[in-house]
Image: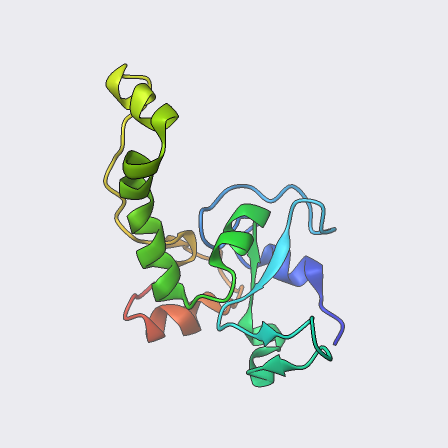
Amino acid sequence: MKVDRKQIHALFDGHCAYCGCVLESESGKHMQVDHVEPVWRKWHKNGDSRNPENNNESNYFPTCPSCNHYKSTMSINDFREQLRLIPERLKRDSVTFNHCLRHGMIKVKEWDGVFYFEKYVKPENIETTSKKYSKNLKISF
């Protein structure tokens, strides 16, 4: 299936659907296309996938490489919960993080758990798939 990367890039005005960072181009250098509802591929076998019905343009979001890789095959709500756990994992596992905290170089702030696409206000006359997912997550535009 040929993906219209420019159309996907424009969904959130050139921003990552999850963190909101600017995606510099739709060419693929700084943007990746995420399956909002996961598609698990078995690359090590014959290339088949689980949930192939999710491999369609209405299930694509533009993302930065970092968000796309971290989300991997998680649902949106699982991704949200994993992100909430990061500060405690860093406090538990990272000496550098703890040094920076103690010396006031960084601060952990509470995250509201709302992704960019859930806050995004689309320009007039542009339909996006974000409305579909916000409805499913009980978030309105």
